[in-house]
Image (cartoon, rainbow, N blue to C red):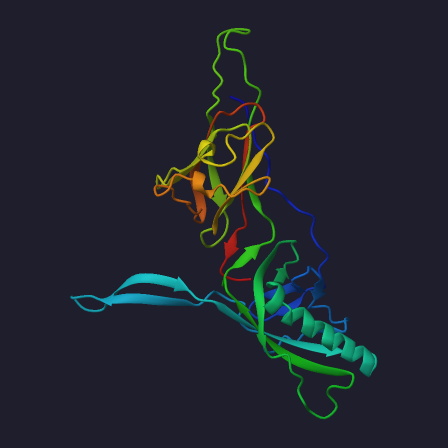
Length: 318
């Protein structure tokens, strides 16, 4: 059966400020993206606001809590490792050509950070000179206060913002994507006896270049009546039987998306199809660092049936 494989998706790179030396990171460009998508350059020393390198912290490896049990022969044995939420300290200098310009910039940046508490997280994005970039979701915790010293608060001042990260890992801005599509089916007797499976789209090896597990998203395009995803190294699998959902089998061009974290199944028209998973046997498995053998299997597949696996690699450091 013919298989069509697409390369890794490479979105257009956003504009980044000039790189500078950042503690715990090195030579890099840093941008803060607020909840509505506005980009605030943080390392452009010619701008009206920029990061004060002295005092930056929290960009290194995640902190962990280790749970252990006493060992009868002495010492302890590790039972569980839990990554902890991250705190980033981010000093910023703000200035203006006059007091009104400074006040406008100060208020605008304060709102850009504090609106994360009402409208969802912002993103702190670190870009390298080679074009690669990682980001982390942040919430404002405190610290947007001026120095309160003589001469500050007129045309310049600085704040030391504290940003809280519920997920301590940095995420690549470039998604990794694996695409599998059913080619045109062939007649068994034309031009000679041949076989074209309508079941298995194929086994493949998925490579996770990150430091920790990722939880992928699956996008299925019909026709298909049931979809099974298997992680071959562990045997973990899950099946979405469209006959057990309110939607019914996928017709040509219809879609369904499966999210593994949090568990969620939605049709292209927004229907909740999570009941179609084969609970309680279903295991919405993750992809560990390195290479992982997986298999996509569709019942009722025909020309145009496709599966797209997408994930963003996660890293310990910026």
